[in-house]
Image 1 (cartoon, rainbow, N blue to C red):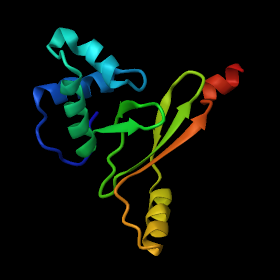
Image 2: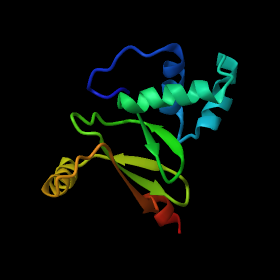
Image 3: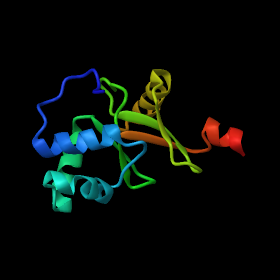
Length: 135
């Protein structure tokens, strides 16, 4: 599933990396992506990092800073580069949350102090419903 906003055509490597992330059950590190795509001809970490960098810039992929891993974007983020993630510390599941009111509030707070936001990523850590129920 691709976000609603338009993006330039993907290169072969970008397409391979994006597809790997959309099919993954959770976040993947660049090296895991490389391992998964060796049979497709990707041999060097730089190939994966270049593809990931571009996919992040065009909004198809998010980097989860605390995990040093990547996930495919499941929401079109429109004009702002902001994302909120709920990360289960037990099973590793990552949910991408979308709340325009929260994003708008953060943009307002930044604007109030004349701060130009380049990127916003919020990571909530805890337990997903399934893990909480199993505990």
